[in-house]
Image 1 (spheres, rainbow, N blue to C red):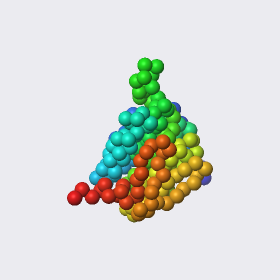
Image 2: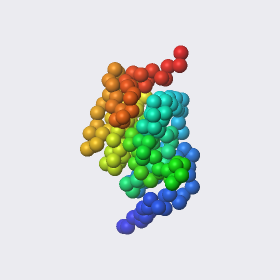
Image 3: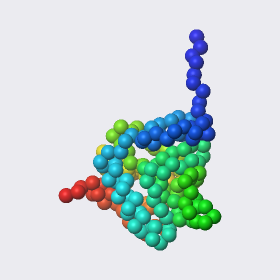
Image 4: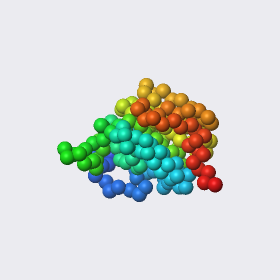
Length: 186
Protein backbone atom coordinates (compact mmCIF):
# COMPACT_ATOMS: atom_id res chain seq x y z
CA UNK A 1 0.00 0.00 0.00
CA UNK A 2 1.33 3.42 -0.95
CA UNK A 3 0.67 6.44 1.21
CA UNK A 4 0.57 9.74 -0.63
CA UNK A 5 2.50 12.52 1.04
CA UNK A 6 2.07 16.22 0.60
CA UNK A 7 4.98 17.88 -1.17
CA UNK A 8 7.00 19.97 1.20
CA UNK A 9 6.54 23.73 0.91
CA UNK A 10 9.63 25.72 -0.02
CA UNK A 11 10.73 28.86 1.80
CA UNK A 12 9.91 30.94 -1.29
CA UNK A 13 6.39 29.48 -1.42
CA UNK A 14 5.91 30.13 2.30
CA UNK A 15 6.97 33.78 1.93
CA UNK A 16 4.31 34.28 -0.78
CA UNK A 17 1.52 33.14 1.57
CA UNK A 18 -0.52 35.80 3.37
CA UNK A 19 0.66 36.62 6.89
CA UNK A 20 -1.26 34.96 9.69
CA UNK A 21 -2.37 36.46 12.99
CA UNK A 22 -0.57 35.54 15.14
CA UNK A 23 2.49 35.03 12.94
CA UNK A 24 3.69 31.66 11.67
CA UNK A 25 7.27 30.42 11.59
CA UNK A 26 8.68 28.34 8.75
CA UNK A 27 11.48 26.07 9.91
CA UNK A 28 12.62 22.65 8.71
CA UNK A 29 9.95 22.76 6.00
CA UNK A 30 7.16 23.06 8.58
CA UNK A 31 4.75 25.93 9.21
CA UNK A 32 4.17 26.51 12.92
CA UNK A 33 1.69 29.19 13.94
CA UNK A 34 2.64 30.98 17.14
CA UNK A 35 0.04 31.12 19.92
CA UNK A 36 -1.70 34.40 20.66
CA UNK A 37 0.32 36.14 23.42
CA UNK A 38 -1.37 36.32 26.79
CA UNK A 39 -0.75 38.59 29.80
CA UNK A 40 2.56 37.27 31.15
CA UNK A 41 4.01 36.79 27.69
CA UNK A 42 2.97 40.24 26.52
CA UNK A 43 4.28 42.01 29.63
CA UNK A 44 7.65 40.22 29.49
CA UNK A 45 8.02 40.90 25.75
CA UNK A 46 7.17 44.60 26.06
CA UNK A 47 9.35 45.14 29.12
CA UNK A 48 12.32 43.36 27.53
CA UNK A 49 12.12 45.59 24.44
CA UNK A 50 11.78 48.74 26.57
CA UNK A 51 14.65 47.74 28.87
CA UNK A 52 17.06 46.80 26.08
CA UNK A 53 16.17 49.82 23.93
CA UNK A 54 16.39 52.15 26.94
CA UNK A 55 20.10 51.41 27.09
CA UNK A 56 21.15 50.31 23.61
CA UNK A 57 19.13 52.57 21.29
CA UNK A 58 20.29 55.98 22.53
CA UNK A 59 23.91 54.85 22.28
CA UNK A 60 23.29 53.31 18.84
CA UNK A 61 24.59 49.95 20.05
CA UNK A 62 21.58 47.78 19.21
CA UNK A 63 17.82 47.80 18.81
CA UNK A 64 15.25 45.31 20.14
CA UNK A 65 12.32 44.57 17.82
CA UNK A 66 9.11 42.84 18.89
CA UNK A 67 7.65 40.17 16.58
CA UNK A 68 9.95 40.88 13.62
CA UNK A 69 10.11 38.35 10.78
CA UNK A 70 13.69 37.26 10.12
CA UNK A 71 14.46 35.10 7.09
CA UNK A 72 17.83 33.33 7.04
CA UNK A 73 19.41 29.91 6.80
CA UNK A 74 16.47 28.42 4.89
CA UNK A 75 13.91 29.43 7.53
CA UNK A 76 11.65 32.38 8.25
CA UNK A 77 10.96 32.94 11.94
CA UNK A 78 9.36 35.57 14.15
CA UNK A 79 11.13 35.63 17.52
CA UNK A 80 9.25 37.31 20.35
CA UNK A 81 12.19 39.75 20.60
CA UNK A 82 14.97 40.14 18.00
CA UNK A 83 17.95 42.28 18.90
CA UNK A 84 20.24 43.55 16.16
CA UNK A 85 23.52 45.37 16.58
CA UNK A 86 23.05 48.91 15.27
CA UNK A 87 25.44 48.49 12.33
CA UNK A 88 23.65 45.28 11.21
CA UNK A 89 20.14 46.76 11.02
CA UNK A 90 19.25 46.63 7.30
CA UNK A 91 18.82 50.14 5.90
CA UNK A 92 18.28 51.86 2.59
CA UNK A 93 21.12 54.00 1.17
CA UNK A 94 19.44 57.04 2.79
CA UNK A 95 19.54 55.34 6.23
CA UNK A 96 15.87 54.39 6.52
CA UNK A 97 15.14 50.93 7.93
CA UNK A 98 14.01 48.33 5.40
CA UNK A 99 10.99 46.11 5.88
CA UNK A 100 12.45 42.68 5.07
CA UNK A 101 15.12 41.39 7.41
CA UNK A 102 16.97 38.63 5.59
CA UNK A 103 19.61 38.16 8.28
CA UNK A 104 19.80 36.45 11.66
CA UNK A 105 19.29 38.44 14.86
CA UNK A 106 22.32 38.90 17.09
CA UNK A 107 20.18 38.06 20.13
CA UNK A 108 16.91 36.13 19.86
CA UNK A 109 14.46 35.90 22.77
CA UNK A 110 11.53 33.51 22.97
CA UNK A 111 8.95 33.42 25.76
CA UNK A 112 7.32 30.03 26.17
CA UNK A 113 3.53 30.24 26.09
CA UNK A 114 1.37 27.64 27.86
CA UNK A 115 0.31 26.08 24.52
CA UNK A 116 3.80 25.90 23.01
CA UNK A 117 6.06 22.88 22.91
CA UNK A 118 9.48 23.44 24.42
CA UNK A 119 11.14 21.35 21.69
CA UNK A 120 9.72 23.50 18.84
CA UNK A 121 10.76 26.78 20.45
CA UNK A 122 14.21 25.48 21.43
CA UNK A 123 14.75 24.20 17.87
CA UNK A 124 14.09 27.75 16.63
CA UNK A 125 16.78 29.15 18.93
CA UNK A 126 19.19 26.38 17.94
CA UNK A 127 18.58 27.29 14.27
CA UNK A 128 19.47 30.88 15.17
CA UNK A 129 22.64 29.73 16.93
CA UNK A 130 23.73 27.59 13.97
CA UNK A 131 23.31 30.61 11.70
CA UNK A 132 25.26 33.23 13.65
CA UNK A 133 23.05 34.42 16.52
CA UNK A 134 25.31 35.13 19.49
CA UNK A 135 22.77 34.86 22.32
CA UNK A 136 19.42 33.13 22.55
CA UNK A 137 17.05 33.08 25.52
CA UNK A 138 14.13 30.77 26.08
CA UNK A 139 12.14 32.27 28.94
CA UNK A 140 9.85 29.80 30.71
CA UNK A 141 7.33 31.60 32.95
CA UNK A 142 5.89 28.33 34.25
CA UNK A 143 9.05 27.33 36.13
CA UNK A 144 10.66 30.80 36.19
CA UNK A 145 13.78 29.75 34.32
CA UNK A 146 15.73 30.90 31.29
CA UNK A 147 17.61 28.61 28.92
CA UNK A 148 20.53 30.39 27.29
CA UNK A 149 21.55 29.21 23.82
CA UNK A 150 25.05 30.12 22.65
CA UNK A 151 27.44 29.37 19.77
CA UNK A 152 28.38 25.72 19.24
CA UNK A 153 24.88 24.79 20.46
CA UNK A 154 25.88 25.31 24.09
CA UNK A 155 22.81 25.50 26.34
CA UNK A 156 22.83 26.84 29.92
CA UNK A 157 20.03 26.87 32.51
CA UNK A 158 19.53 30.03 34.59
CA UNK A 159 17.30 30.33 37.66
CA UNK A 160 16.73 32.63 40.63
CA UNK A 161 19.57 35.07 41.24
CA UNK A 162 21.59 33.84 38.24
CA UNK A 163 22.89 36.72 36.15
CA UNK A 164 21.94 36.31 32.49
CA UNK A 165 24.43 36.62 29.66
CA UNK A 166 23.57 39.64 27.53
CA UNK A 167 24.66 40.53 24.00
CA UNK A 168 28.17 41.88 24.32
CA UNK A 169 28.39 45.67 24.24
CA UNK A 170 25.04 46.31 25.93
CA UNK A 171 25.65 47.55 29.45
CA UNK A 172 22.77 45.78 31.11
CA UNK A 173 22.68 43.37 34.00
CA UNK A 174 19.60 41.20 34.50
CA UNK A 175 18.87 38.23 36.71
CA UNK A 176 16.17 35.65 36.25
CA UNK A 177 14.47 36.97 39.41
CA UNK A 178 14.38 40.50 38.00
CA UNK A 179 12.75 39.36 34.77
CA UNK A 180 10.01 37.43 36.54
CA UNK A 181 9.66 40.25 39.07
CA UNK A 182 8.27 42.35 36.21
CA UNK A 183 5.17 40.16 36.33
CA UNK A 184 4.24 41.43 39.79
CA UNK A 185 2.32 44.65 39.25
CA UNK A 186 1.53 45.34 42.92
